[in-house]
Amino acid sequence: MIMKPLEFEKPIADLEAEILKLQKQSNTQDIDLSSEITAMEFKLNSLKQEIYDNLTPWQRVQIARHTNRPFMLDYLAHGFEDFVELHGDRHIGDDHSMPGGFARIGNQKVVVIGHQKGRDTKENLLRNFGSAHPEGYRKALRLMRLAERFKLPVITMIDTPGAFPGIGAEERNIAEAIAFNLKEMMNLKTPIIACVLGEGGSGGALGIGVADKVMMMENAYYSVISPEGCAAILWKHRQHAPEAAEAMKIAAPDLGELNLIDVVVAEPRGGAHHDHETSALNFREAILTQLAEIQKLSTEEMLDARYQKFRQYGEWNGDGIA
Image 1: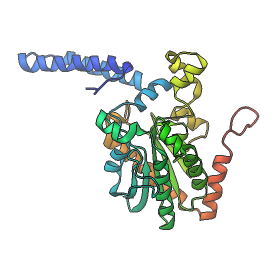
Image 2: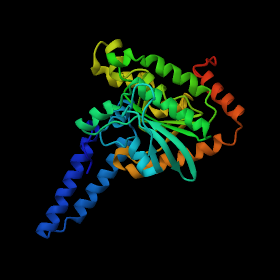
Image 3: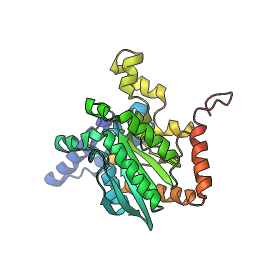
Image 4: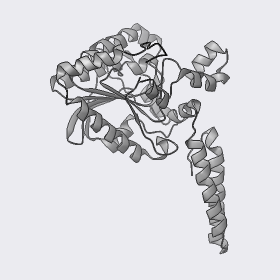
């Protein structure tokens, strides 16, 4: 059964409920309903294929926001080993929405940093709904510099609706914290891989998004503004969010075609929330593959490739955006 089905998944959930009802009836009343159950299971598989193989950008946004979707710490639990969290930015304090520390992936020691959301009210208050404060970005930079000192690759996991826009964050200069990260990450002398796990919202995502390889999970999105925000500006109503999501080209397949990301990491059919372990293993394999490719380069070649990668964003080739 689908846990907390999304609106477009309700026909699948209804059919699964009917199949379970028939199976229960067959078992309790000793009636042979195998042919009916088989026919409905075939119909269910066809329905899943029809829906999940033709997801719209807006449906992918809904999947990216699913509360059962694996978050950063879930990927760490299933895809990494020996995680040791480090705390604090050495200026203001710690930010629980941006955990980070040492870990191991395969035989490779790395530093991992990312956004962490919560699944219930208590955890969301602790994690600030995945929206980091300035000290979160400064802590991230501190850990990146630590990685550079010890020649460890940096893995960042992006999953945020955006950086925290509160008065306190503005007072502590969140814009400067993000901008400074962009500058410093461009020159960091160690491999960096960034992956958008779910939501990749605006500067909050970019603050840990400058990397040699930028990956996205198949049903993630990466955008300067949310579809609802775009719809409110252009159509004067949030109900046009589906059209905005389509027009903005924010889904992983679209961004891959535009060469704005390097890798789209496959998810289980229907989304990562259906199978955390398989999603994490796919993520792990993609990280190891891209890391091996980056490590073939000298430091100078790596930095030049990183610069050229971002320098060509938005280039006009005569027919359209390159």
